[in-house]
Image (cartoon, rainbow, N blue to C red; front, side, top):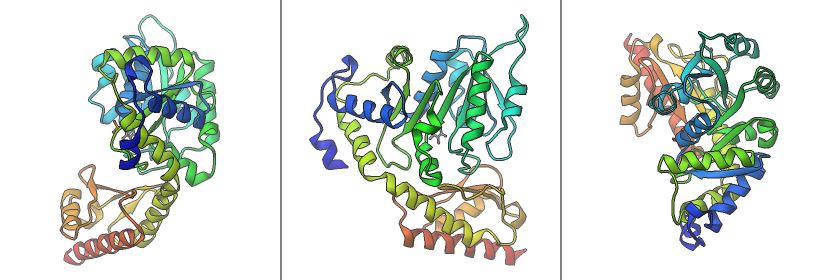
Length: 332
Ligand SMILES: *Cc1c(COP(=O)(O)O)cnc(C)c1O
């Protein structure tokens, strides 16, 4: 990847004349079955720009209550777009089409206007669950019938693709905006590509520029994205398999609690509350054994597999999590 970056042919991205960035945008747009794409510094900016283009101040967007948009984007849509967020309570980041439809506001002079719905495929903080294609399509169709735009936060869309065998373009079909993160499982240092119609991308460019996201010789980093699409997609399947291995090794341990949907892709979330310890204490014990897991709540642990964790690494992570859980269980 570093060599591909060093060899990249570059130009000026702001004037759309960086050939490597253009190639990356076209490649991702084709992968997602969209007309065009725009390179962004981050997935967070993709979500924000998609919201800014497709809403106006005083509108409301509908997301799940564990979504990245709602929890970890510093309320960008509210702070910059003046948009309020209806966050649907979900078991594993996945709401039903009925739940979504019930959340759409009846037009009234007193109500915010429901303008956009977002589906996070796969879910992040709720454990890598994979949305069902039929549900995504029903949500998309309900949105369009009721005058809303439909957005996919596809930070890890390709993890869903390798888990189900359903092509990315099938998931993205008919959605108004969709993006992929290059810096998650694909292993790039930076970047994401936001896609939609040509008209959408024209407007997305205006916001990208306004937010300071326009670049110069971005081909240096876009080349990493092209390299990852050539060489790292198979790795995502290995990440999912490594996660499954960890899940199977720890799922029956007393004191740990898992969602029924756990283990579908490369993220595993579980509760350690039954061990009588905090997630922070649990994570600290794992780290002392060189296994880094993340405390994402008082009692919730998140485990993520990625291209720096090989099969033996996953086996070792499973052993350490097991031993730490058993150690805490014995102390009770
Ligand atoms: C990581 C992530 C983002 C944000 O992407 P960055 O590139 O870190 O800004 C958005 N949504 C989901 C679901 C993510 O996992």
